[in-house]
Image 1 (cartoon, rainbow, N blue to C red):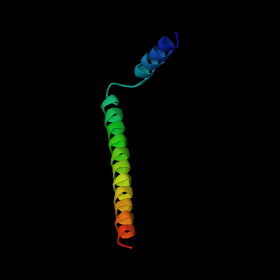
Image 2: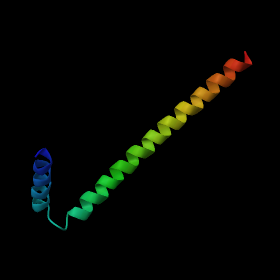
Image 3: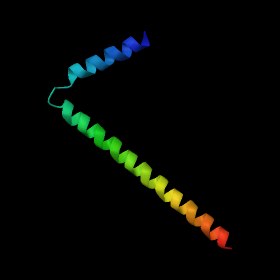
Image 4: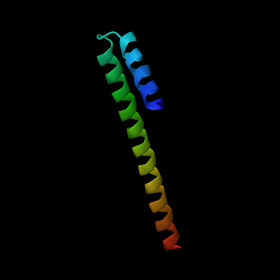
Length: 61
C-alpha cells in the first residue's frame, strides 16, 4: 500500500509539471548529480594523495 501512495504522489507531481519544463528538470538533476560525484571524486583523490604522502614521509624517517 505505501508503494501505491508513492506512485500516486509521483503521478500527481507529473500532472503538475508542464511537459516543457520536464527536460529542464531532468537536465538540472543530472548536472547536480554529476557535480556532486565530481566533488566526491576530487575529495577522495586528495585524501588518497595526502595519505600516500604521509606514508612516504613516515617511511623515510
